[in-house]
Length: 125
Picture 1 (cartoon, one colour):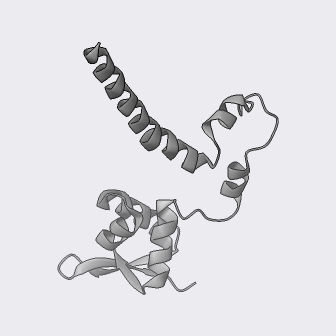
Picture 2 (cartoon, rainbow, N blue to C red):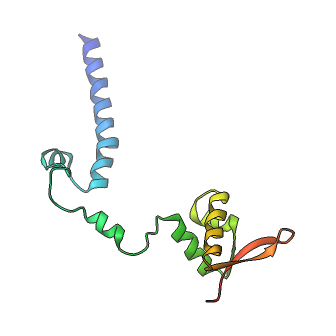
Picture 3 (cartoon, rainbow, N blue to C red):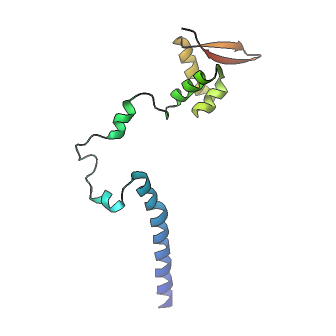
């Protein structure tokens, strides 16, 4: 009988831990109680538009790494590929490809050389 009580007590602690740390995280992210989320209709079945999708289409998104690189380029007068990669949170090669695309579009110009270091400036339009 004592073993059964210890096992049930251990199960209760595991359940409380699971509820507090995992379920509460979901509740905080959604802003709703889990029971209310169970009884509300699923987004597939509801005819409501998703407000986050509408927000996404309005203007630049700070989560877009290209936008962060573009902002960093305008904030500083010149930027290297390493600085662009750290600002965008991407690999240096990916940042170089994006900066090369901006250069081919005529929005930035490459300056410097391989001995001193290559950096990019916003081109005067």
